[in-house]
Length: 582
Image (tube, rainbow, N blue to C red; front, side):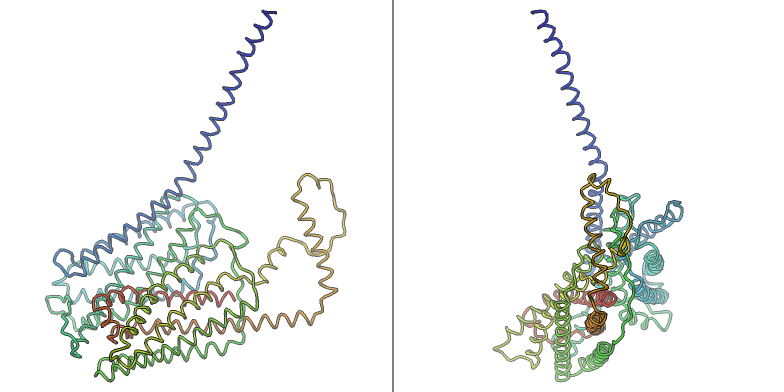
């Protein structure tokens, strides 16, 4: 008995602890393998995304710091220092794009996945036109350097050459690789793409600051000529004579091309940001497909009203630029004319956007909740770029209210109405654009199951042998039975003329939406043209300047006006996408 029980105890001691130790070792191995997988796959890729974003942000802040030092016109930081820094960044981007394209050409693997929504052909075509105007600006810069080459730095001649090469290479990259969804060398490519994003943002900032400084100098000169103040302008001119007779033409023409160059760089940075967000992304086959293009009959009222708005905008621009330089009476008349024109334009745009939202409420199209980085970025940029003009509008409202009890110019009430309508117009237009981008037509829902399912009735033998192996097959059988029943009802119960009436009604609603969209499209182009080419009454009306002071108000305008210009051009691009989608 004792020996037997001792043998049992020995057996327990032999097998019990060893089995528990083996199970614990297996658990440790599984935990280690899971930890290894999480450290080698998920965490570093997210870490690379964060690191690349921080790298690009600090790159931009370095450039902005140099620009702020340059704005003081001190002896320490000069223009050639900033242009040298930007030139080095452009050369680095050129090297990355060349490496990327060479590797794509040498790979024998099949073509990479491509995002159908990133960089549509009409956006790339518009960017190509803006790039051509940027190349003309580079040619003017080279001509300016040739005229003054004896007394200015060689960097001013190298920069436009590198910028032209950068523009040509970048347009080629946008046409052939912007839709790529990168799945190899993800960490390296994240840094390359984000470097390109922030290089273009830095070029945008440089253009904005140069254009704002030029306009501010003209404004100061105008105030001095009218006798309002004796403000000195700071313009750095070369200390030698031009060797050609067209130097003044080159320097003057540059500032008429700056708006196109500015829009080019900000749009390129947005497209490259979508490419950066697509790195490592798994695409949804159903949502990642092009929509078939539809014809647009009945487009008459929208284009006519849009062309009328565009023609009136050009007229207001010409009259304003001519009369604002003259006496105080003509200057006030020009400012009043602008605000009256703006009130009518913004009221019409509010009505058109509200009518479009009403059509969506009547039609009740379903919402598209699929993942789409391009559409998400469009929405965020619309809301973010609205902040500039909202800040400017509320400052104008405060200034108009502050001067209520004192002698004020005749355009104070129209300025107040214009500012309030500008806030309302952007709110309603943003709602219309965002809702249009997220709406999905009912035909798109109906097309999806027809690709992979048979809707005709099936009279053959159905095998039920595997019916119980996977309960998930039951909804599929139910769906097929509903399709068979629906097929019979579709031909037996629904008369043909009723369907025709529904199609006509839906077609009329689409016709209304297309007319609204093309009208808003032309109106946003009109409202971009005015401030882009010098019609900026916020500088000239002296209402806000009296309330906030010259330095504070000019700082607000230097921030708000570039954001407003980008908002208008981005709205144009978004409305064209809505027009194609409706």
